[in-house]
Length: 251
Image 1 (cartoon, rainbow, N blue to C red):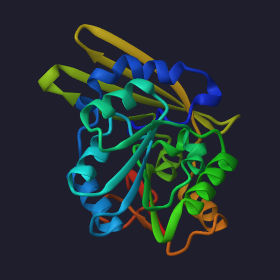
Image 2 (image 1 turned 30 degrees about the vertical axis):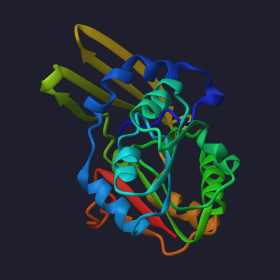
Image 3 (image 1 turned 45 degrees about the vertical axis):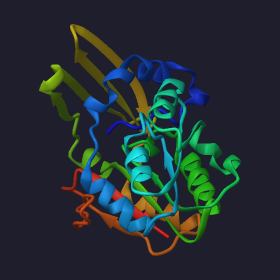
Image 4 (image 1 turned 120 degrees about the vertical axis):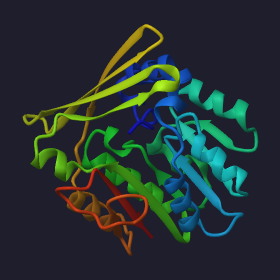
């Protein structure tokens, strides 16, 4: 999970600097998923519709949706990622912006999506609630919100300390991901190691491991209805102890 450079302005530049270092390899680490695109299109409805991509990274999903006729706005905190997206596709309104400030866009969307475990880079439940409230205010009537995070019900219950290593043999790349739960502060120390081109780039960031029931409660508190949970982007059933991701769709 990787599109998470959009939430860190309050914590200094460490993660942003990390993403600047790995920007040239980003699409090799996190290639486009057709299942994700299919669900995004289903939720948005037939184009043209207004879509907001939160924590867009290098913008592969924004570009795919733009190519399909949607009107896309994309935000991320990393300037290099946004500049790369602007160079690839000028029809997308790509901006350097914190996800907690989406109301400053002053527009309404048919679909807002935040994928790649970005949400849990917010500091706590209060910040997640603030983001969800801003999303609700930024959606058109009947608009939808799609969230994807790692399934922390499973991570915490089974004391999982790593995620599967991402390997891309085309560029001789390995992306290792480790979890260390810090019970005293209820945070996960997320360590990543990128090995490529005889380089090794290591980074640490703290995650807030929001569980499914807590996230659904925050969505309800923020005013969302018709909240659905899935265990993958093909909308298979969410199993708290077995599903790898948690996907939530709310209206």
